[in-house]
Image 1 (cartoon, rainbow, N blue to C red):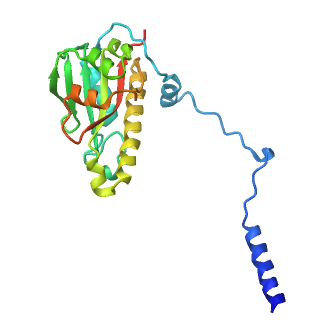
Image 2 (tube, helix red, strand yellow; image 1 turned 135 degrees about the vertical axis):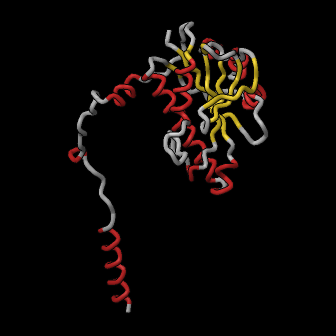
Image 3 (cartoon, rainbow, N blue to C red; image 1 turned 90 degrees about the horizontal axis):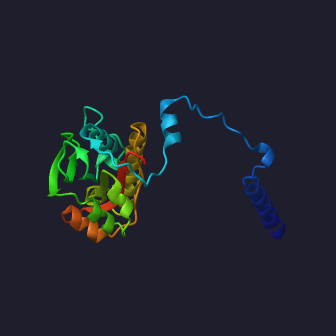
Length: 223
C-alpha cells in the first residue's frame, strides 16, 4: 500500500514539475523593430514633454476648443467620445479655467461634449487662485488656460460598484494624454498636476455635491 502511494506521489510530482515554466535566458531576448517615427502620431508622442514655463501669448478660442474635444469630444454619430470609458458611462467633466483665451471673457467654463460648447460658471481670471489651490505652484498662473478634469464617480459605481472608481481613474489618464498630445500637435505644451487641495479646487470651481476634481492641466505656448 505504501509503495502504491509513493508511486502516485512521484507521478504527481513529476507532472507538477513539468508544468513549471522556466525563466528565459538572456540569449532568448528579442529586440523589436524600430518605431516608425515618420508616422505623424509617433512624432507627436516623441515630442511631448512636460512644460511648466509658458510664453505670455493667449490661446485662440479654436485652440481651446480643439483641446477640449480631444479630451472628451463626441467622435461618432452614436455619441461615443474620443476617450474610452467603462460601459460608455462617461463620468468625467471638464472645466476650462480661462485667463487669456482670445474671444472668451476670463472665467471658468464647463465643457458640454454633446453641444461642443461652453457654459460659464464663475466669472473672472482665477488662474492665480487655482495656483494657490494647487499648493502654491505659481507657474500654473502663467499658463493662459488650464483644464481641470473632474468626475462624478456615481455614474460608474452605480453599475460597477467600487470597481467603477478604478475605471474613472483609468479614464482620467486617457483624457489627459489625449489633451496633451493634441496640445503638442498644436505647438503648445502642458503637464498634469495632481498636487492640489481638493476642497479648495472644488470651491473655486463651484462644483456640485458628488463631483470631485482629479487633475489640473495647464496649457500654453512654451517659453
